[in-house]
Length: 275
Image 1 (cartoon, rainbow, N blue to C red):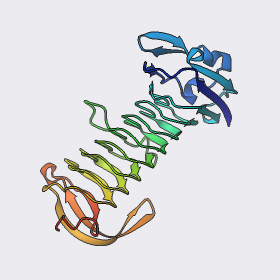
Image 2 (image 1 turned 90 degrees about the vertical axis):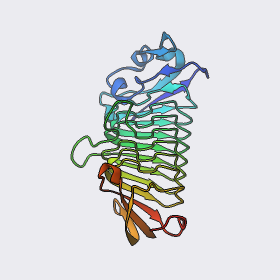
Image 3 (image 1 turned 120 degrees about the horizontal axis):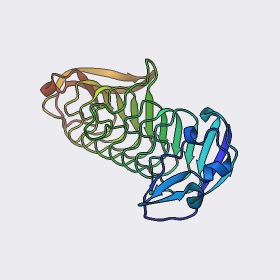
Image 4 (image 1 turned 135 degrees about the horizontal axis):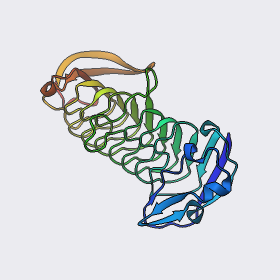
């Protein structure tokens, strides 16, 4: 793959609308042409080369391009939005909407990601090695579907090594979100499909108003909505070929929505929840 390196020239609190930072937008352009791409910095337009040192070599196809951002870019929003192929590696923090509406490729964030990471993504992979903000893999306000598949057998995956905020996987229809740490309230809100795996603890209202889908909590759940019905105790749970040893308590719901989704919670760590 051809590598293009972007090194921030400033650390400012002014937001940058950085959706142009994508293999799809860089493909077929020379380094000089990439430097001249216009972005909004606050209420003024700037050339990308005025905000980043741009170096490396481009390619004709997005799938042949790897973009590396050297350092924190916490105010750079929409990095990789809608990308279909290629790779972006961010060696630090990144702003809101990273990887939103992705259709393919891979994004690696070596620091923290702000809110709306992977919102409404269709395919591809996002790996956040730090913490994520609210609404990971969720739907935007007024939209009825968050993550959903691009085509049959083609779904998106989001992996968060740290913690995630509230409303993760909200309105998910397909795809997979994995949080290695703890997760905030309203996880899996309005889910209609897909899979959410939480290795740590989950806060209140998990799975609220879900109709389909699968939620697995390996840690402690602060509460379980009374609109979920206990179905069975199982010795283990499988997710995409990976097995997790239990025992687990499986609840179905949300019955307030006539839902048939499943929530699996660790029996050992949730003695406060009675079947």
